[in-house]
Length: 126
Image (tube, rainbow, N blue to C red; front, side, top):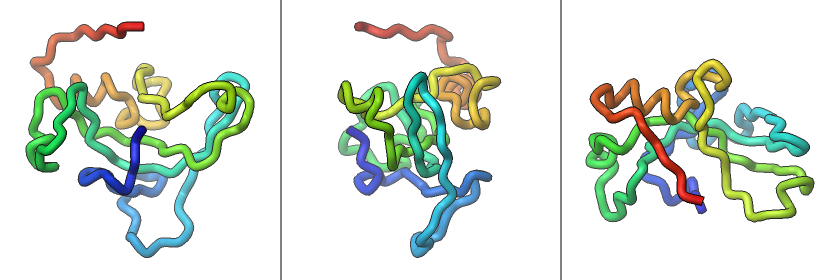
């Protein structure tokens, strides 16, 4: 489970991508529909990796070829239906850039932009 306060690389953002001061009480939020439910969340920038880099410094992680800087939405509220029916810990932006709120929300778009020599394949084991 992602814990924002445990991250060394997360930066709180406004909707326009500008950093938010630590003492701000009210932040920009977004409401997004997922199928039959909705989430409300805060904007942030985070470094996301395909492999674990436990024990690495934030600077080392940002340089790793399997990591990318990504804008994310951290859910603060979720409707009971359908999210109460299963453990839900977030949605990684796997959609195309054209479907994202901003191109920086697209994990694959950012990964290929920042790592142009990366092999263009991805697999999921279910």
